[in-house]
Length: 110
Image 1 (tube, rainbow, N blue to C red):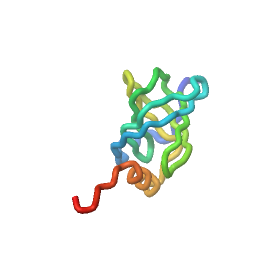
Image 2 (tube, helix red, strand yellow):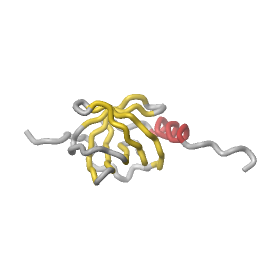
Image 3 (spheres, rainbow, N blue to C red):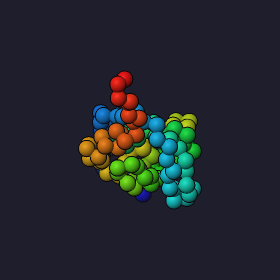
Image 4 (cartoon, one colour):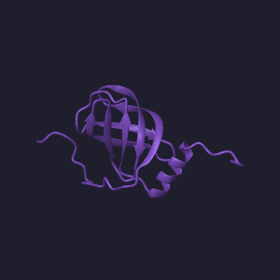
């Protein structure tokens, strides 16, 4: 049996990415709670910083605004950054609502 996750979405790196700064607490089956920050997100996954050493294919569960709980698989890691793929594709309208809820609103008149 080969190691790692069997990911169903092969290459959707062209999905629109949104730059965010979202601190999250992820649940890992062996390590418990992990704190890191999501730095960009798309409908298929996210990039995060402040990630501890994890192996390819390891899973975490996070809670996202507007989306709720979702599982993600580690696809790549480099020092303290890592890329994760969601277990399922997030609907575009839900993703846009989430991103809008994270971006500070401009004051009227500016």
